[in-house]
Length: 198
Length: 180
Image (tube, rainbow over all chains, first blue to last red; front, side, top):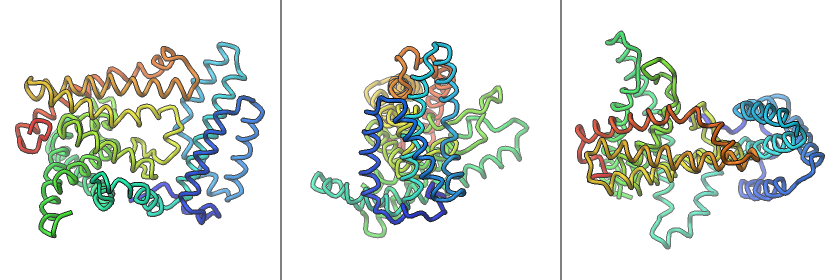
């Protein structure tokens, strides 16, 4: 399945995932303790330059990942212009932009396998509570494998609907999609048990 | 054991699929994202514990960088953005929805509707509005104004969750674990 990892290689790709996650946590806490508008704006410019230093293609990919934020910038802008507190609005908006941009940077430069490895290491102590890391790994693998499978089946159901009905596909299609998920779960459970179980 | 894991994993995949399928529209033709419907169904069909875990698995995979949220969003940036409260509230919403179905004796469809309403709308919006208020630096009432427009759609989805859970209970009574 497609992940959000950037195809453009950067030096950050080679930094261990755990280090990047720890740095992200530290920087995010630091960012929210910044109260000066100028420092937050400096951080915004710095982050933009960092993205650009990894190449134009990478920066464009990064900008696309920030697109879902625009309605919130619009709301913040209108709100604070109306109140006449534009500096406060700019501070909140810029801080949000940097926080999301930093987090996206970790996602874009870390491969899924490396992220899963960090999770498995972090979950290892849970084995003493009866939660086997292997079970978690199987569950993650199943979701990654079955999301596209279920998606294909859902699309086939949609086509079958359109072939037989003049009505547009509506929410009722969720019932057979859910049914397929339930039946697949039963079959996969049987298959795992047949192979010796978890 | 195997069945628990596969039910949890397949329902996590179901939430992703419902967020990515573009073809679902209300009777009026207004397109909606069915992702929160998936969250409700996890609770009403799988019950509190398994449903909550299924959604937790889904949210975990989003954090790891899979673009599974509606509109293909995902990654760690989601947890710094104004919608963070909804994502964090998802597992709790499914848990509460499942709890309502497990603890009430009403007919399954009605219980699922009630569960989806309490968990998938009330609890989810409490989390969602709180997250938005914190990230955008607004008061709670102001943040609730921003998301208020989405509440009617989610009320409709709660009704859909009721009908779908009822349908599943009729077709696969043994698979509706919230009442098994």
